[in-house]
Image: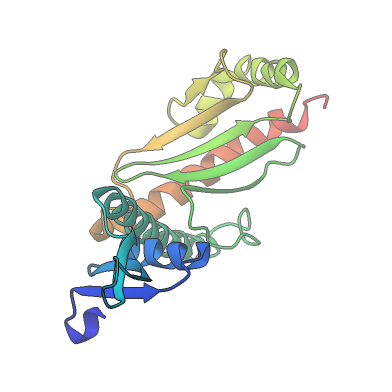
Length: 223
């Protein structure tokens, strides 16, 4: 449609079905053109000649445009993040085997196990910020266990941060099931493409340091 410059399309059917409505709704969400689905019926008033009656079944709306815009934004975000993670993982393989078996993701994070069940070493990225973390979550009904693991690790905070080389963010998250230990990378995020190489290097170095500083204490956990 848009390739030939058309701005309006009308689909006329005698028996509109749910799949017709779905197709038109999808087109209005995903295209810049306007699509209409009309039902045609033959009517006669008195002794007049039969004439067509057209009834609008579905057409473009502000809501469908908003849904379409959100879907396009989401698809773009997924594509950008996938590209960012692909580059990061390629770089990371040159320095560490930690995430060597992980595939790029379209989501805001990717991770691998930290050597104990329920403990993950994760990268995460937002529009303008990155983060590496140890995420502690052994699943449903494991809140007390998660907090006990966190408490065991934070009891060695001084040694862990000395090995890491700088302070970490210690988040017990008392109102949630999980806990985390993290380091923010504030150079930029996935929307700062001109800084990607620098951001990726900083994330990888922080991940290597986080894993190294936590590993001895994770190995001692009685879980």
